[in-house]
Amino acid sequence: MKTQHRILLVDDDAGSRMALAALLTGANALVQTAGSGESALEILQQNHFDILITDLNLPGVSGIDLLKWSRANATETIVILITGQGSAESAVTAMKEGAFDYITKPLNFNELLMVIDKALEKHKLVAENTYLREQLRGKYKFDNIIGNSAPMQLIFRNMEKIIHTDSTVLVLGESGTGKELVARAIHFNSQRKNHPFVAINCGAIPSELLESELFGHIRGAFTGAIADKPGKFELANHGTIFLDEIGTMPPLLQTRLLRVLQEHEVERVGSGRKIKLDVRVISATNADLEKSVQRGLFRDDLYYRLNVIPIPLPALRDRREDIALLARHFLKKCCAEMNRESMAFSPEALRLFELYEWPGNVREMENIIERAVALSDSAIVTAGDLPTAMRNAQQNINSNPLTAPRVTMDGVNMPELLMEIERTMINEALHLSRGIKARAATLLGLNRTTLVEKMKRLDLKD
Image (cartoon, rainbow, N blue to C red):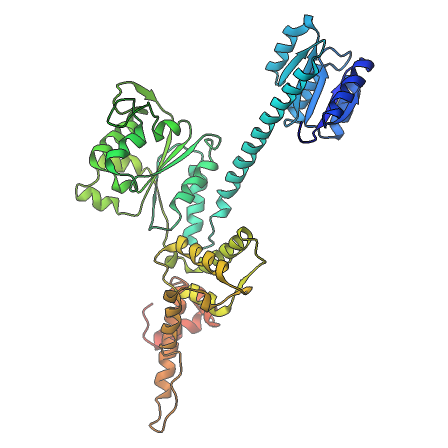
């Protein structure tokens, strides 16, 4: 044992217990001993151990009792049994209850060390897998999809409803809106969360290779097929497959995919053997599939199969009230990932975030903030840390009527300028609030009735 591990050794034979404890201590273990099952149970209830080594045949509370208690209350503790030659059959039965292994008396200490090392290695892998699963579940919780806006709240409500079903889902939205994040969140909050989530970008794989990637192939099916290979559908069995950019799929593959969805089975390329599947399908596209169907580019029957539950994701510019929230979230995330102290946005920088049109949506925002954090020498992200395209938004502000002209000897038409400024500010507030007058009035520091009166006076559309 290269690293010290905590071991509880239970044996009612004091001589054997002391001798084995000394050997384990010499092998770099932290050993605590118990002479009975009752005292071992008391110790287990108050302490954590990496390994429990217990005699199988103890009077009173037996080794089996300790094993069952550990499986119920200390699942990370490895249990190794010590048994006499005549009770090996009982030890095998105990292993079915969850013991890692058993050693028969008289003990071979080197054999015991080998069993301990194997158990610790398995324990390490199980712990790592558990940690990774928890990390994934945490990463894809609904509350990690950021948004307080009405469109996002509707999406959250719909996602809550569909995680308990196996219906196919079609996620719609522009590039960068977070379609795969939504798909993963659905999977990791569903009953399939302990099974694979397999993603494939249908638009990134040449059409001649996509069939093999999706459905697998057998050896010799085509040139270069030197071995059998399972497809993504097989790898996702009992879990979820995410088909991104589904609108790019060639017609021939659309037919094969339709058959898989109908029959719940797949055939590898070159094979006639059918493989039964239990897979949930979530697909996504930034294309207008209805138009593709009308143009004969996408099968209508496949479209209806995929579009059982549609989830349309809004573009970032259509949920501007979420922009500041998202920006601060990504800033905090990037600082943590780069081991930087907490940072903040200058008011001017945050204003640019709110005014920018975000053609690349949420993905573009995260990339811009990551670059700003990496290159900034300050704890404040300023307008100068942002790309030229975003700073141009500031230039547009400076060129609009909100910037008061200089008064010259020719004079100015102040009433007209003030009306133009009011008109611009009201239009901007209505845009930011998505047309909700009460919210726009709050942004302008007005009550709603005053805003409505001003809109009528300025002949602004309701």
